Image (cartoon, rainbow, N blue to C red; front, top):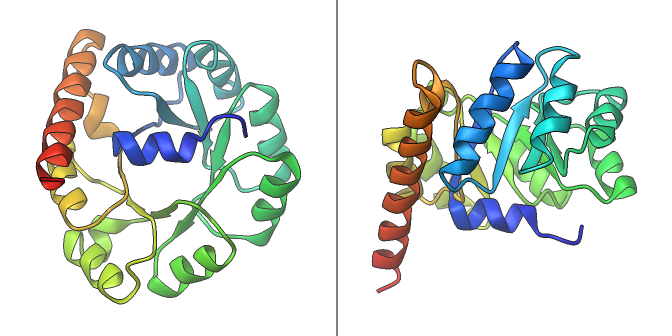
Length: 209
C-alpha cells in the first residue's frame, strides 16, 4: 500500500460509483470524472466485461473494484489493476484478503452494530448503505453522535447536491452513483466534478477557520 488511497478519498470527500453494464461506457464516464479532478473512483463489477474496463481505467486512475463478495472476484479485480476493493457487506473473508494482499478494503454496513464491528476489524472506511432509505443525513448524525470515531461514507440514492449536507453531518466522504453521471455528456460530467470538488474545498477551508 505505497499510496494511501483511503486518505485520498477522505481528502476529496466525494467518491463516484460507476455502475454500468457496458465496459466502453464505463471507461468514458471514468475518464470524464478523472478529467474533472477525481483521484479515486469505484467501478462496480456488473459483469465479467467490467474487469476489462477496470484494466483500462487503471492506466489513468486509482480504481476501487466495487460489489466484490467472493475471493475469485477480488483476485480478478486485482489482476485487472484495481488498487482497492469494496463490498456491499462486511465479512471476515474479505478482511483476510485485504490483509494478505495488502490491498485496502472498504466494507459495507447498514446498521450501527455492523459499522462498529467493521471498525473493530480495523476497516479504515465504512460505506453505509442504503443511507437514504435508513434515514439520510439524520441517520449519519445519529450514529456519529454515539460513535464519533467511525469513518463513515454514506451512499445509496444520494444526489450530488446533497454531498455537502452529509459532509456537514460528519461523513468522512460521500458516495454518489448515477446522479453523478446518468444523462450527462462526458463534458458535463467533467464540469459537474469540478464544481462539486470546488464546493467541497470551499466548505472544508471555511470549516477550518
